[in-house]
Image 1 (cartoon, rainbow, N blue to C red):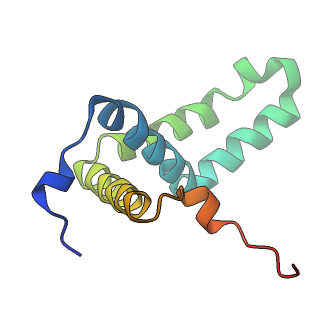
Image 2: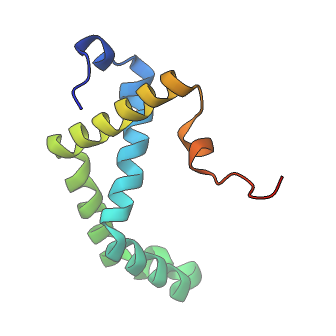
Length: 106
């Protein structure tokens, strides 16, 4: 689905806040193993996590930064945002509400 070039114009808040938010969410999904390792280390280490989990934290940061610096990943997230925005403009319903199930009994 090709978007009209006028529809691809992004406001400052879209470029600097909304698209990076999608990127963070998707990067955390793609770095699932590193997130799990870091979370487990933190839970097991308690107060000493700052010292004990450096290796896991570094691995997580490397994975996330690799995604944040990937221009193709940015474009993928940008296109996802533009599709969501276009759908909202058509329906007036935010994505979150559209994805929630309607009650079956009325």
